[in-house]
Length: 137
Length: 90
View 1: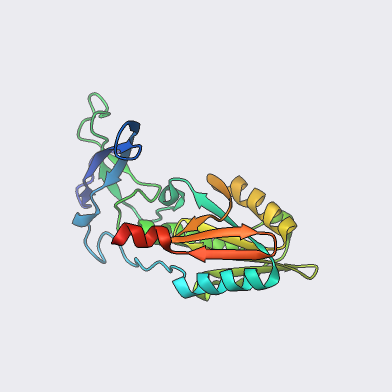
View 2 (view 1 turned 45 degrees about the vertical axis):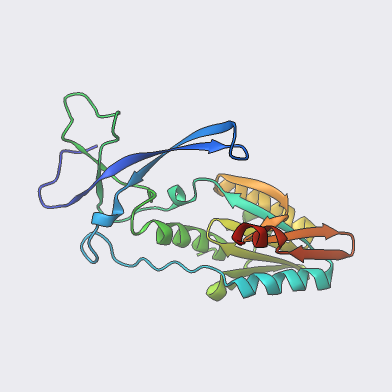
């Protein structure tokens, strides 16, 4: 947490709450996610590249066909809170977490280290991390 | 990467990755936050372990459902269907 910078914009932040139901009836769980209001970010000022490659559906189908042909089993893994694995390199600030503001430092802001959901660069930051891990760069 | 597996081959152009270790093949497809692994069972196992060390992950075991595609994997056969997906959109 740092004093509010005068020469940098600060991205807003908010909580999103969701109630998950089991088959539209009883409540399964309550979810809360803290996000950045990325819509206020300005291209080339607050962020640069945003492209993140996603596999083609046809690639997935051909892998399924190949696995069937070769008699391989297909496994699946899912990354939890994916984007938070992404690293934010640039200097980026967001407002403090609503309800968790630090006493006497209410005007301070948070320097972002990880790719929070909602940031323009979040998907790319994750993609960069996993791609360099898989390719060993 | 993939420390225990050693060397790596690459074709990240299409988010497809593959590794060849002692004549055994492992293929990984990256789709946003999902990873699909196929090929040699032993390689899949050690790759999963490596990934779990690096990232917080959920091992979903054999693929049953992916992007609207239901997958049944049995001995010597693989069956796919989009029945569930069809029911959702109509």
